[in-house]
Image (cartoon, rainbow, N blue to C red; front, side):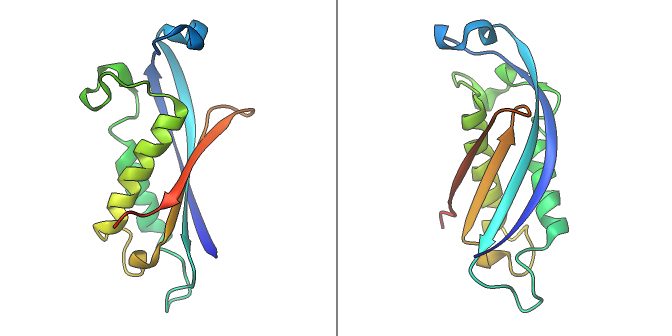
Length: 134
């Protein structure tokens, strides 16, 4: 299996509901380093997994609406706990849609899996990995 990974970061604010979250129930900020890996069984005729520039552009387009936002105030997240794990799946879904829409460029249709990792800090990270629903 071949893979290519691109990286970006976002700065957000959010809060959580429930005693499980302790002090994180209050509004707080987070800076996430976001890695997205694209997997395929064989390389394209050009010898790549995916166009890195287009993959990075798709990631930036996905993260742009979240950057410097209070996630508690965004309509798409109303009633949701925007945990690191939840955000991994949200970003995965957007990147899978970018793949299906051809935004990864020629050869992007051969991507079979995507893994999204959010690094919360130097000691904690979460990820979501899955096949791309067609």
